[in-house]
Image (cartoon, rainbow, N blue to C red):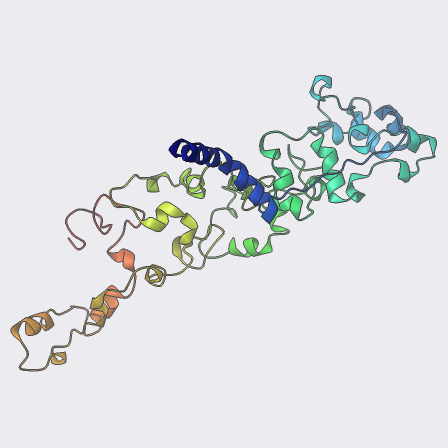
Length: 343
């Protein structure tokens, strides 16, 4: 009986990952955009020289040696060598499809693929014939793909900007849709995007899997610690929310509070911590009735030099006045040194 129980338990342990995956698929947790490759039935390749006979506006871009053009031939696609094509036809027909029917029917656009006018999944399927590795491999699971944002919505193959052929530079391209994040960029506390010291792709992979699509294979905190290394630790006395998720306290896109905090002090701290009892103490001697015990009178004699409201001011403003090392410390209660909070 015991051996049978162990065998069944072992089977459950081995089958648990499969059950979790099947459960996620059934509940829609794992989603994927199905890309449909468009096809021109019966068409054959004609070669990009044939394309240039009619599309003289692009001829200079395709053949700069003879005409001096500097468009398509200067892009990453125009500079590809034959051995880099991975089986694809070189030139216009790699993206626009075989063009013989288009040529034989007096340029009828029904017989040629126009990525800018195709549905997002079909246009992206053309790109995915080659671009399926590295950071691009999760595109079909990305929030962009699932929202019908295709490759040509961000990339312009003929005259895009930079080596990625973007329609605009980052972050201008991203904030053309993500306007809430654009507004946060102008808050009093923000990352240096406006200054050009970083951009959206410093933290995000636009082709990444569903969610925030962060540039890390580990936790969100590990992405933040790539730059903010002094908060990495390990510390003897850690701060639980810091160890769990930086965004519990910080809004990385921008905040009206200092240091990208989602709330000003002490309100942020008071969401988890109780306020000090000193806040209710008065420094006024008259607050202690006569005839009280010696201990009560001694406590009342502790006067805050900032006046009768001094204790409220001292313990009800900024917690980091005393607890300065909130990301973790080797001393209790995160003071600056081991000699107490006020020394």
